Length: 396
Image (cartoon, rainbow, N blue to C red; front, side):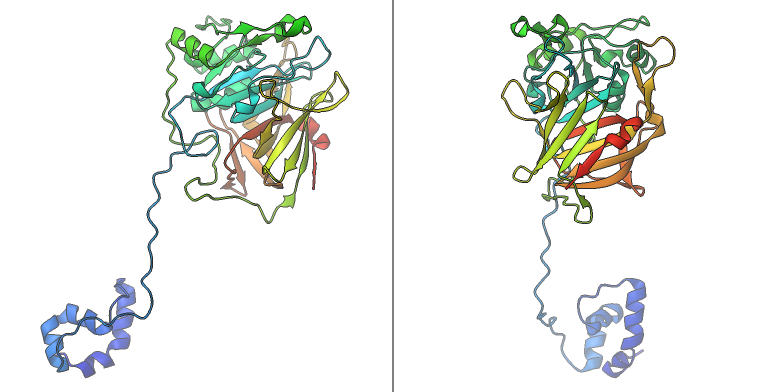
């Protein structure tokens, strides 16, 4: 068939529709496409004109952004990864009932990437400081015994759990989930292999009770791990929480969420943590209620005098009650139940939900079924008894 320009023009509408259905490129003229389809020489001859180069476009060429490098974030902060360290969780004492029964101010907490707080027994709370590398751990403590509600949070990440002693229920989880190889300082209630921790004592002027005078450090933890044959290198391919992408500098401002610049989290009447948002640092500064003095005091790191501050606060409410039987009031968190959560970041609050279906599965936070993203940086994670829900407060 002889292809003429008249025929080509008459057929342009049909051909354009065909192009759309066929997914043909929109670049170049319709004549160019027909010439390629039917043969360049025949189409050019039928039009009575010599083949010409495509006309220059008046629109500037679209600039393509360079591809992003592979995502490789620190598992605890979401910042660009600096190494291949294994997550290490250190149990830290938080008792503050009198001058003698007093663990504050603690040491080494300002270097922690995630600080977990939850009720343990006797209506006291305890802390677990998470570090992404053993070399990032300064002197930390006072060191205290392990509890399963903290172990279950780091278990999915194959983190080293470091403490001095543990509850029988913690040992039970270590035994049933075959976690003895990453548990340092535990007990052998169920003939579970144990590895001793390495630590040192500081009498702190002889004022506080002996059980509040034990400290450890990065070099000591490394030595304990070497003694136990535990590797401190681990190649994480995901993060503890979904974080804003460090490669793009993404910043989550939550413009559609309510202001929340003051937050109070109550674990019990005598153990409460309060936070005030600092616009300059874009972080929440922490205070803790002191039963010894009867008022809130800044939570500071004794090593450097810095007040603890966090870019994110995540408060998760859960059913918490003493284990049945003669448990000594050791508290059990019903993680499998899931529940209500609140994310505080950049001076705003986002209500959400959390789930943790099994001890070896991570805690996940969502909003209407979609994963919730946190800003990069340090995070305070509170696991709070549902019975304390009415005492929980935040305002602008």
